[in-house]
Length: 188
Image (cartoon, rainbow, N blue to C red):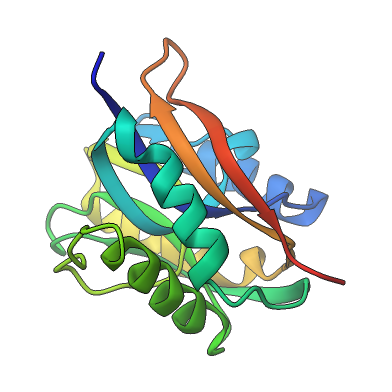
C-alpha cells in the first residue's frame, strides 16, 4: 500500500448529558436509515486530506509541529443541532459550537502547515462541528425536521479540547478505525 487515508482533527470526549440526548435522538428517529457515529470516534475535523503518500506522512507531522500555534486547553460550548445537505435530502446530523476564533486560528495554521508540504487548501468552506450521524434514507422527512427542532436545546454541553491529532482512517466492520499518526498536546 502506497497511501494512507488521512485527516487532521480535534478528538473530543462527551459527557453523560450529551450521551443521554444522543440516545433520545436515536430513539426518536427509530425506523430511519441513519448510521450513528460511535461516541468513541467523535472529533472535529479541521482538514480531511484523503489519500496521502506514506512517504510524506512524517513530513506532514513535522510541518504541523512547526507551523501550528497550539492554544491552551479549553472548554467550548456545543450548540445548534442541525443537518448538512439539501433540505429534501439531509446527509449529516451535527452539532455546532459557540462562536469563537479558536477553530479558525487552528484551521488557518493547519492549512499553512499542509501548504508547506505542497497540499493545496480545501475548496469547501469550513464549519466546526461534531457529526452525530450520517443520514442514509428518510421515510418521514417532516418528522425528521420536527425531531431535530424539538431536540435542539438538549445538546448544550461543554467539550474539552486538549490536543490536535493527525489521523489515519481505515475502513472497519463497525465503522472507520482512526489511528493517530502524530498527537500534539495543548498546554494547560
